[in-house]
Length: 186
Ligand SMILES: [Zn+2]
Image (cartoon, helix red, strand yellow):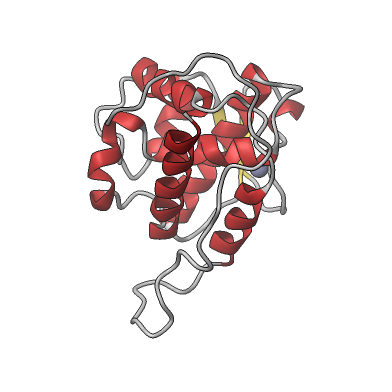
């Protein structure tokens, strides 16, 4: 992929134009139930991004490199990346996210019987922790989701994204959209 870091520039206020629905059409048989998470994340991604375009990918690359995660699509990628960066992952049952800052070094992840969903949640909480660390006062929740998706499908594995089975398929489709937005803004 021809991604590269770009020189500093002010981020545009709105980066992505999402198609009406990136999930599979309702007429097709689904292998898993429709997820309200897909709609929620699509909404989040429409909000302004404040972190420099391309920086999310840069952080995700660094995280993967330092963790030496052999298979970026490992079903437990979120837990492994978090652990190798010194985070303790604890399940928690309440709603909401982004409470990483409350307990330093601890990521609280809402459990799910769906392993792909659980992994995406772990990646998201890791992204919350990383955004707090790198861009504490300058990031939006859209930035955190852009980073979450980049952690799920890092640049080096982007071309193999159709093989990804470690996060919900809708997350892979959203990652394609954010990657395109980054290329367009470059
Ligand atoms: Zn969050």
